Amino acid sequence: MLSVGLTGGLASGKSTVAKLFNELGAIIIDADKIARDVVTIGSVGLAQVEQQFGTACLLADGSLNRAYLRDLIFKDAHKKQLLENITHPLIYAEIKRLMQLQSEQAYIIIEIPLLIETQMQALVEHIIVVDCLPEQQIQRALVRDTVSKDTIQAIMATQVSREQRLEYADSIIDNSDNTSLVQQVNFLHSHFMQYAL
Image (cartoon, rainbow, N blue to C red; front, side, top):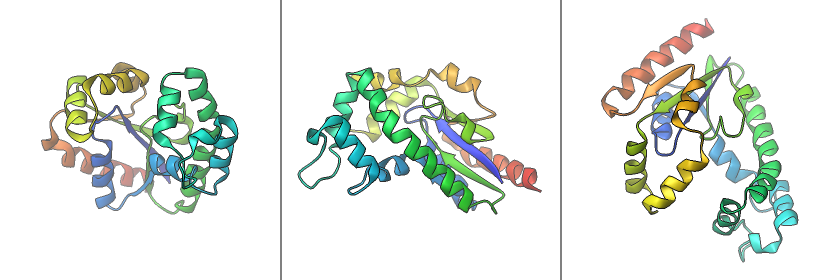
């Protein structure tokens, strides 16, 4: 089984590309969903986060107060590191577990937006970077998210640069123009299927 990491900058089109691979029959492991799952009510992850950051990081129903925690770590790199020290090993372990369950597949896609930033490249054998111009990222994020341009640019500043991300790419999907996305995904799907033979 070939393990393929799918990554890209904010609003580059990762989810759209993952959906296209899924429509071709590929199994998708979504790291963002796993990141949410490892801190659900009753989880070891949530208990560790509460122990580290106190009850202020919880909502009245006992679930994680994501807005509070996001603001906290956005302003403090040390606290961000403390949170990642809790969540990243849990996310990594769960991705590995799900990969093992799919070992009979020709290939699987692991969608990890922060693959490079979290240094999880060792998880995968092939890296796809979904790429577009930074100006396009900003425009798409403004349409998709109810946040300001300043916030979008601040988020992008916490990610590796476009140039750094592309250095890690084994394959690049150009999403500056949506018209060729399907063809690019179909080409890679065929390549991965042939690799598995």
